[in-house]
Amino acid sequence: MGLTISATSGTIDNAFNVRNPKTNEIEAQTFSASQFLEEVEDGEKPVAFLGYSEPFDLTSEQYGTSTMVRLLFQVGDGHDQAGGLFSTMFGMKLGPKARLREVVVAMLGRDLKPGEEVDFDDLVGARLIVSTKSELNGKGTVITKYVSSRPAKKGAPKKDIWQDEKY
Figure 1 (cartoon, one colour):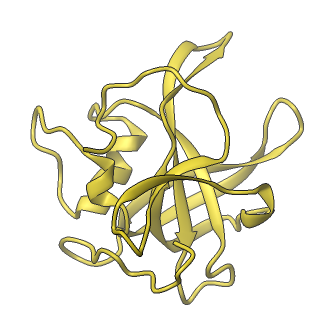
Figure 2: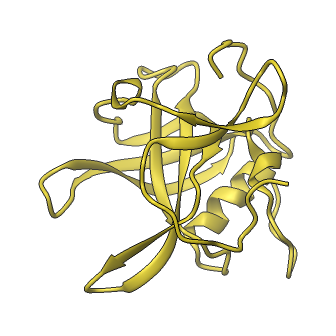
């Protein structure tokens, strides 16, 4: 069973749980910084959900400690940055106003039922449309911020859309 919304502490790194195409199993894989887009273009883009980080705690003066997860996306065909990887961070909540819920709903192609648990392993490979914007963080680094998402097509998205052997 993959990640469900019952978080534990961890650390932020470039390790993501992704599907091994040879075994069809979800496995941890570390990506180098050079494998990610240097800067993700602002606006909508077709993407595939490739994987997720282990949950980790993030503490800020403004919000206190929150449990977070990073989601890994690959930009799809028909976009200037096709094939590029990027990740963005979400709080580990699926409440009605949670951004993670919006992404999960776009991946599922339907709303969540009350009390429904989400296993990210089941969503790996889902297609969706994600809108992002670039911002400077407090350290002067450009980061990719999630803005919104929607299903790529009406109904459930296709799975296992990537033929590339490295994923």
